[in-house]
Length: 114
Length: 122
Image (cartoon, rainbow over all chains, first blue to last red; front, side, top):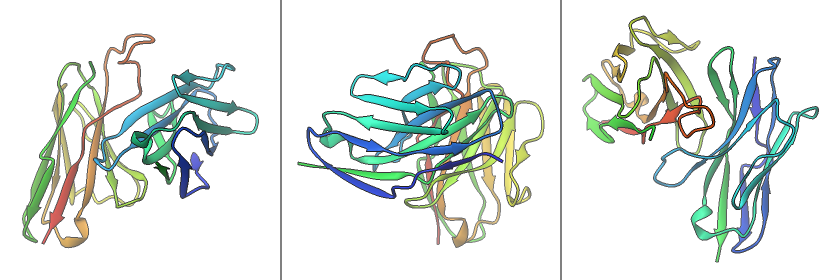
């Protein structure tokens, strides 16, 4: 069985500051991808960043970057220069390539304060 | 690219009626589509995997006769909630996998999400 754990149900950060969201996962597969999705109040699922498990280099997308520690099965998301529009629920997900299915964490609700 | 349209976005109906939700891939072909259910402030729970031209694969605990899935074409999957009751009220999200994802492109994702359907059963 594949599991994804987000240990922070809620977090807040001041505008322009940096925040890190935690995620750990467990899988017996070798072929998998890791993702962070953003779900704003509109409830649309928006892909923030992806990481191929076979790549050692941490993925970066503008203000968003990850700290991927494969041995520790850790995949945290760092948001730099936080903006009010970053307020949303964030889900960490692990996609099993062989099974073709994704497992999602319980989510972290992030509030960016002005 | 990789747009998924889900319809309706919000539906309210009486208990006992059946509700059909459509999931369409607009600019790509999808041999596989996924149906999720999400309660407020909770995670996405996979209900079933829909395969074009074959029967859907349901996750453990999901009633097949309650949630009917049809994937008759490469661009359309439907979820029908039969004889809906208030406990079926939830947010339902579909996603679709591109049959021919371009390497390193936007389409190279395991799934592209629709905007979801808010179902309220009175």
